[in-house]
Length: 619
View (tube, rainbow, N blue to C red):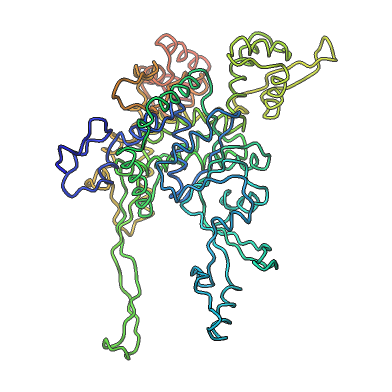
């Protein structure tokens, strides 16, 4: 096929750009729009419109299956909002053998459906090799001993477990240590029936850490596991429902439009190829230590949440590994060689020490990855931290907060009326009572006796920044500096002081300086500019690559948050008044008048002062 024929008019990829000797996998890996093109295809050909957060979180969960720290995703929300549909459609792009779609199966069904019977040497037992009547008693004895010492291996490494229904409680109890990453391998024994009706004890080993997606969390025992991952709710609302209805109409009118096409085959092949690259790559987050200082630390689960949050950064970097800077460590690794003396088979075996040259590649997560993950985290944080589904959180923000701004105490009738005024889906007071109970359980609301009538109950908002899970990490990007990156690099060189350590622009690029990488990949200012596209919702144009925007919406910081950011940015060194006000206007964001007013306030309260040279400095 000629190069000119490689690109079809309706394809997302221009394969005419392939150069001689460049593998298709590397070509797609270096495409800066690879993620956006995947989301575009999933939306048009996959039939999953809107729901950008859900699609991206399912995608990252699926990719994580081949990393050292797979993640768990819990889909919450009422029935018929598309939890299962979005999950199944997104996973079609990944190898079928890697995605196990599970119902409420029992432990025995799991074992017989997915277990492999192996002997002591981990070699699979094939019952077609069972000795027949004409074989010797010795062979029969060896076969019997081999089977008696056998065990079932359920290898979950590199798998995506999709729980379409809540798993059987016994199955859940078997899998829980694995899903929690408490142990790499768990051993069980259970009693099973033989073909003759007798009983025998079987040995089962569950091995590896899979990525997991729960499409239902109705059972309490599943909910208890939700602290080990992320919780999201698919988009809900008339726009989403209208988009879903239109997709059904398109499928009915043009069924061939949704057939698997060439781009689907390319993307599916790419994700299969991609997982083989991860085994030779490490990943590091240069900003992780500074980011940890800004991460919320109110609850014990915050430690686990930060591990999950940083795992998203690692996954994003690996997905874009060919576009990220790389740290290369070259070292000589000691080896032991054995050989026969004089090269003769009957010669004495001798050992000799030797060395081999090893190159270790570590992909660096950049601010591009942080931007992407921050935007996802903005959508998933409240659901993940509180454990509440999205429709209850929407009720809180749409009805409870506005009502609380008007009156300190209110009752169920007022809440029901307020919610039904702003919502298309009307709810009864009984439903509102249940939602209030959920919000009380997480410490956002409190029920107390009505001061004017003790027989009635009134509701008060007690949610604060501390118990809401609202994250301070969105102020972090403006405080990560070249100085911080240099500290990270100095520590890396110290750790590998006996080896050659260099930085490269990417895996195929040449050596790069720390300063140039900072300007290209880590300088926060280039990512924090407000653009028109961020101020107004982006509209998809014909033929345009759309998808989840990778830059966070810049929200107005409180004075306290802005001061934290400014102190981190300027440190204890003197700085210009104009630089301070510029930072307030840019990262606050504040108007010039507001910036001047805040500066005067900080001076009057003694938080900063003018040096004799006319510079400003923090106290």
